[in-house]
Picture 1 (cartoon, rainbow, N blue to C red):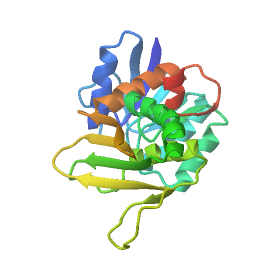
Picture 2: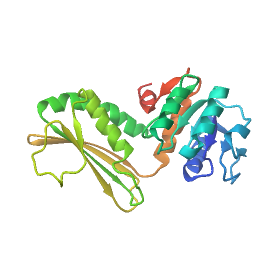
Picture 3: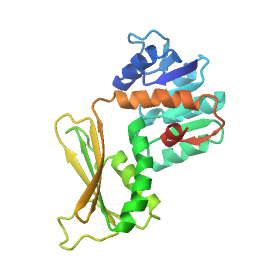
Picture 4: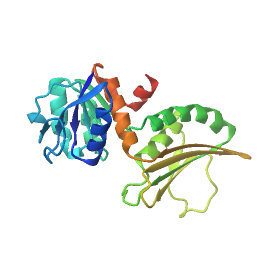
Length: 252
């Protein structure tokens, strides 16, 4: 049984994680952390991490970057593994997350979806075969009209996966409207679409002579991220100190 402390338990993603764990006989939420208060949870909720006295194996965080320092102090002092699912961290905060990995097991991933992280691995093999054969690479991502950042962190992670497999010789192009020139063979185009209530859609296109190969992932609800976080908690429980990501879960 993996014992979980859920940070951000009163928010939307916290409620989704709570429901998923309730249906999973191998996991249990022993406490929540959320300044919003108790809510309707069937486990104790603490306003701050430092007030939490529950014994646990893993902390899952779906709260805010503002909570990072308190959560890091809590997890490192008690040697509780930590999974940070929140977005919007600064470079300085990411450095602190990596530094904490010297004291306890820490996981941070651009996307918690198992499908996306499997796709990251598949793209490496595809790129090694198709790019040398002259295929161009394009990434197209689609999200709801409330998303403020573009391109998405996941789109960049997909492009990075291709680029790393090819020796990081590719440059990213986000806008072709300002320059009139042919496409460079060492560029990856990344396009963003915003509209409606699209949860998340990512497509990687390998376009060659007379043939096109497309890799596509569609998220129909945010529960895919919560499911991935719970799977990650099972994986990370009991692991030695170190920095992990969802690729480790996929390849386990």
